[in-house]
Image (cartoon, rainbow, N blue to C red; front, side, top):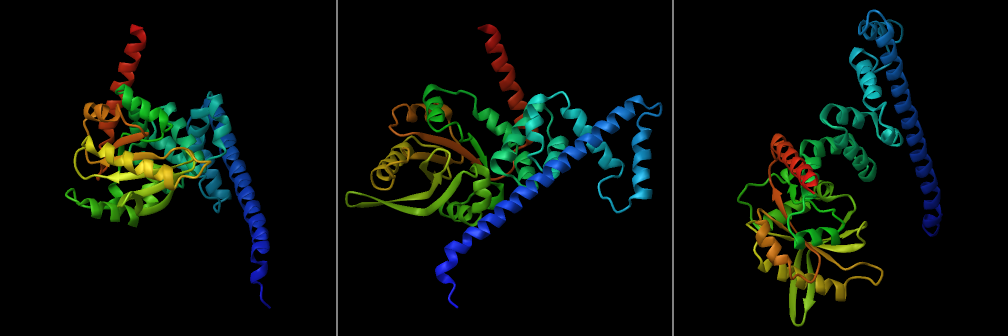
Length: 335
């Protein structure tokens, strides 16, 4: 029997099954997180009230080991994590609706790696928005994504600030492409090919709203063909995003080239319901003053970002962010 004519109809049944599985997983995870929080609350209260203090946790762990050896995660370390989980968020009403939307593995990574509540909230929201796995979250935290994002919010100059606003503030000043595993002297061609080979990690770095359209994407202007290094579509911005890759320092003439690409995309490729195309010039380095001058007369929204081929020292990022926050606070006081 030929079932091909029914394939679309049968796919609806698969969609129903997958939706039910997803709902079941979310419900199970929600109950699991609530259970850990309630156990943490019990342990916290008993530890405060009991005359033996923290010895209560060890006794509870011994009880589980003796009576319920098959239960995983209820050893001394696991019970302390539940206690920490409850105590960390008990006074934070704004996180209560977020807690059950994350997996326990993601919670453990956030609790162990984040130093402030703002940082924890940032990664919680990112986990929910981008649907990070535990491995993906660990990569973002280890690469200092929070610090890089916050530093990218620092207003540098009017033209750069205008470009950031026009692109929804979704682009970072610095991207870490350590996963490419290429030498520092890489050519633009090899950089492009390496990104294609590691496209999943690249999209994780720039944001999961990006969908890959093509490499060396051809646009025609007059009798000339031009090729865009990497072309993406961004669901959040509802527009095409052209990436121009440069292995050296940013040069002003790059902006004119990208403007040409964007105009060609808007005239020939963009659909009526989509927003104007956006450009991203990804360079090995940049001088913000040169970028400001170059963008001040740009007709299309274009971002200029740096890329790093190795992880940035997180302590250095944290120091820069601290200086930025202190500077912003001083400015507020001065006003």
